[in-house]
Every structure is written in structure tokens, then in C-alpha cells.
Image 1 (tube, one colour):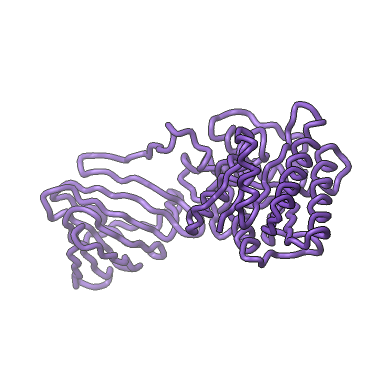
Image 2 (cartoon, helix red, strand yellow; image 1 turned 90 degrees about the horizontal axis):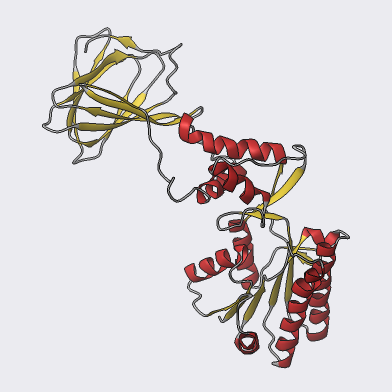
Length: 369
């Protein structure tokens, strides 16, 4: 298909075009504010589908609302009629169209124009009244409060919250793209006369700020947000997209001595913690057992020997492990255990424990294997 996208360099436009290309759509006609006016004439003659995303939401002059949100829509539809092009038209409107303000009135006028176009031409039209969108490539202080909070918190800048109890209805850009794909196939999700993105999320402004601040602190406390929560998962992905490019990496606290090092990597309250253990050649670590705490060892470099002994037995069980063959070894409760570096280079082991270490309740008892 030949797909026309207005507002191609905007937040939604950039994400949409990237996904269209991912799905093999290579004939995409892009219209931006800088485009030569003659291009719209050409593209409206050739296109098979129109994503009309262009609009104005933060102009210097309120008169620009109508010019940007109604004027271009009118021009687009007149050109399609001129060329007798029956391509379906998808319009991104806003929930603000329900409100009596300059922006809302301009979006409502654009909707009405499109519905009139449908009644006149019988061409399929899809009108989406979108809520507050968020996701990668959005602009702080422009597109959404989520972008502003993510951008500022990632840089240690202040944020402003006038009413922490204010309710937000949020919609993630990837969910929008999935719905747009359905519309492209002629199968939009309908709710009355309008098309909708079925998956949205409600959250209070203060809760949103606390979540995003928690994402920032997670690089210090090593916590991982609850990815079972769909909104948290999407917000965390969005937050990471706003990291300054010179701050993608962060240091971990390495507990080092003559034997090697032990470094906590990830901590989660419901999934335990992951650590990296480095042992020098000939070094033995461990020689302890647990009541409830259990672990998984994965040697990723070097050669090691993991030894077990049930605390009421004299029988020793051994597992030889190597970074040449990735193999997980479970560390059951009730067995004292150790890991010995039997190679000539550092032994590097990824260690998972089912609970985060608590110095007040270590559940660790030292007994030689």
C-alpha cells in the first residue's frame, strides 16, 4: 500500500512510520510542516490510505488552533475529492474535543469535517479521540506530562505538581500503533461513531511522579519495577528512553578482597536477587547452608567445582562446571555447599537467590562441606 502520513515527524508519526516499515510497508508518503505544498497534491493522488496526524496543540496564538487543526484537514479532504481518491482516512483527534476551549473546538471542527466528508463521498473514515499518550520519542513540556516527568527526573530537574490527586487517563504509543494496524486492515475498534484504543490506564498525578522517581532510584537500590503491572512496564520503558545519552551506564558496588569480588546486580521483593561472584584461581567460597533461602549458580567464565553435603551426612556430591558449557546448578536448602575455582583464570558466576539479602535475617550458617 501507498500510505500517506501527515505530521510524520511528530511523536505519533515517528512511531507509526517506524512500525509501518517494520511490517514491510516501504511506500510511505511523509508530510511535515517543512514539506513543499506541492507534495500534498501529489500524494493525495497516489495514496491508498491516509493517517492524518498533523495538528497544533501548543500554539503561540489561539487562532492557530483552527488553522492547524481544521485548515490542513480541509485542504487534505479537498485534494482527495479533487483526485477522486477513495482512500480511507484516519484522523487523530483528542478527548479535548468534548470540551469548550479553543483547542477542543478546533479538534471537534476537524471531526465534523471528516464525518461530513464520509456522508458526502461514502469513503471510510476513522476518528480517534485519543487520551494522553506517552512513550518513546515524545517531547517534554509539549506532548505529555509523562514525557516531562521522565525527562526532568532523569536529569535531576524539578517537576511541578499542582494537584497530586488529579486523575490522568493514559494510553501507550505501542497500543495506539496496534489499533492503527487494525484500522489499516479495515477492522478498527469502534465505540459509537468513534474509533478507540481499547487499552488505557488511569493513575493520579502524584502516583505517576512517585513511580517515575522510583525508576530513577532503582539504579541505586538495584530494584526492578513490577513488570506484571502493564502500566508500570510501559512507563519504565518510556523512562529509559529519556535517559541522557552519557548516562546509560551506572556503577555497582563491588565488594572486593584478595579472593575476588561479590556484586549485587538486581533486587526484587517478589523474585529475589541476582549477583555476580568472581573467584580467583584456587579460591573456595561458600561453605554454608540455608533453611529457606535457595539459589541458582550459573558459571559463565572459568572452571569451577560446586560441592554439596547434606548437613547430617558425610557424603559429598560434586558438580564440575565451566563457562564453556552453560549449566544451572540448583542449591537446595539443608545442604552445605561451596564453589571452588579449579581453573587458571577468574571464575565468574551469576548467582540468583530467591530472597534479597537481609542482614537482620541472613539465614546463612557456616559449615565446611
